[in-house]
Amino acid sequence: MDTARPLKVCLDARFADIGHCVGVRTTVAGLASALAELDGDEQYFFLAFQDSHEWLRPFLRNGCRILPVTRRPPPRWRGFVKRLPGVAELYEQVAPWISQAQVGPSDGTLEREGIEVMHFTAQGGFLTDIPTIFAPQDLQHLHLPELFTPRTHHEREVVYRTLCQQAAAVTVMSTQSKQDLVQHFGLPADKIAVIPLAPANAFAAESALPEQDIVRQKYALPSQFAFFPAETWEHKNHIGLLEALAIVRSSRQTNIPLVCTGHPTEFFATVMKRVRELKLTDQVRFLGFLPASEIQCLYRMSRCLIFPTRFEGWGLPLTEAFYARVPAVCSNISPLKEQAAGAALFFDPRNPESIAQALWKVWTDEPLRQRLVRAGAERLKLFSWDHTARLFRALYRKLGNRLLTEEDRALLASPPLT
Image (cartoon, rainbow, N blue to C red; front, side):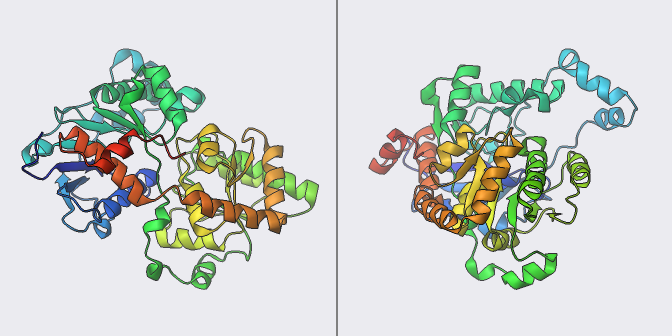
């Protein structure tokens, strides 16, 4: 048991584009903010690209610091292949059988710094002899395989299996994700820790928030609207939500304005095509990627959160809505039901009629909205960045062969909060 020197822990913060990986960046920022406030001898480093880490600096305090690395450029042949008509499509089909996805070795940055525990916060990583924590987030490619190309499906399988096998511990945010890892990868249940996340807006300074009237004028927002913050990935189910809005308009003679935020993906063109087909152009607004402070204002200005996703490992918008005192309407998938319990109104995301019915009910029923807000506030008591950080710190200490406190042992032995 090494107690003579501080434990050096590194968290992966290598995100190339601030508009992407929003959920994981939120996790890293929340952990950075909370870990810095804990008493202890630990030293926290954040592995980040030299040209893309300014987003993290506001959350680094009390000795937490960035460990810079150089971004590795993608192989030149990939860009060449993508420019050849027909070849890119063919490559997607045959790649799993002509090449092997690989997890590369560490470049030595961690080892030179003397890092003792490496926490891979996203769905990737590298090989190292340092004890690691891997957070695969979810196994969506198993549940919705039609949304993945053969190459992407193959790469996920190879990368996830490799990093799960290397890891000294694997962390997920719901018991559904834990069950997936046990059943599909054959991981021992005691290797997997279920650690839920707190809302991103919980560590945003109230004084830094812009005036709601300024945000409303800036984006020409309606006085009432439903809010859906999510990148336009196909599984987020913007299409199902649009069809539900059309149903409410035709069956209830009511136009419910919808405001969406999030980085537009390649699926965005399909979403906008459906907007035009359903004649919802004047009813639906896509604002793109916005600063966290403006997102928090949009939560508070909205009449409800609508979250029609078909698959999640954890729904950050749910706890963000609870924090903002906004009623939540969401999919009845297992992780969200586990997360929200009775603090949201659920619907079948595969059925636009079900989405429409739930959305209409919350939109028009003020007592229901107030009940959901109260339930959300009560549910939120289970989720805090302080608790999440203490859970991870206990895990860091265990893997780093440090003395565990009574609190550490109790946290590691306790069942998931959900």
